[in-house]
Every structure is written in structure tokens, then in C-alpha cells.
Amino acid sequence: PSHSGDDHVNRPGPNATRLQWDEFGGTAMDGAIEIGRDKDVFQFTASKSGRVAIDLTTPFSNLDAGLTVLNSQRRRIARNDNFGSSTDSHLEIIVLVGQSYYVVAAGKRGGTGLYDLSLDYLRSDNANDIGNEPPPAALYTTGHISLVGEAAYYRFTAGAALDLVATLVAS
Image (tube, rainbow, N blue to C red):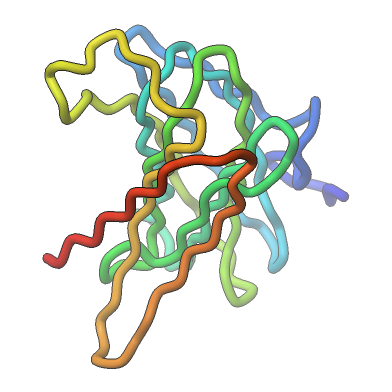
């Protein structure tokens, strides 16, 4: 449950803060994780099908930010903590026009502080796929491995038979 003075609700549902897309295909909101275990939940409806970048940054605090995206059935479809060498979070997901999604911002290890949340539609990497609908099971996520022997694991559940393509890019 939300606590007194909470800036955004803690659970997905009809009271989640609605994000509205601007004419450039973006939306943004700021917030605060006021106490340990606080979560701020936002909801958006995809204005078009495509790839969306979601960033949770902490330029004015030391908050170690965690980011989770849920589908309209409140099932987790993506999660990120500590993108690259920062304590900020970044995800890229495929969305389908008219579908609703929840974005959950949280502090890790009981941390508190201010954050900025931004969502932006990304241009397609393939000039020939203009107008094509992305596959419903598509998911883009990123991670960071910084130590020899360290591993990153991702899990998904397929709702139907599908082709799986995984791409690992070292940088």
C-alpha cells in the first residue's frame, strides 16, 4: 500500500500514474523513492507499435535505481538494474499499438532519492521494415558483465511456438 506523502502509487492498476506521449514520441516524469521498499508505478498505452527505450536516471541523487516493465496482465516482461557502469537503469522493449504497460521504479538495497524517468520511441534499425508490426514476443534488454567469470542470465516463457534469436554484442 502507498504511504502518506508518496508521490506515485506502489502497485500496478487503475491508480498508476499515466504517462502521455508527446508529439515527438516521448514522455517523461520525475519522482522520488521516499523510503526503503517504496515503488513508483507508471502506466502507458503504446501509441504505435515499435521499439521503446526506457531510462531511469538519478542525476540529483545517489539512488541505485531499478527498473521493471510489466504487461497489461502485470507479468514482468523486462527488468534492469545498473546499466553499464552506472547505478541507473535502461531497457528497450517492443510494444504493440493499443497495448498497456506498467513501468515500476524502485530503489535497490533500501536506497532513497530522486529520479527521472523517460520513454522514447526508437527509430527502426532496418530501413526496409517501415510499417511492419513487430513480433509480439520480441524483447530487447541489455546487461553488463564487468568481471572475468561473471554471468548474466535472462529467462522468458514462450506463450506459443516461436523462433528464438539471441544476439550478444561485446563492447
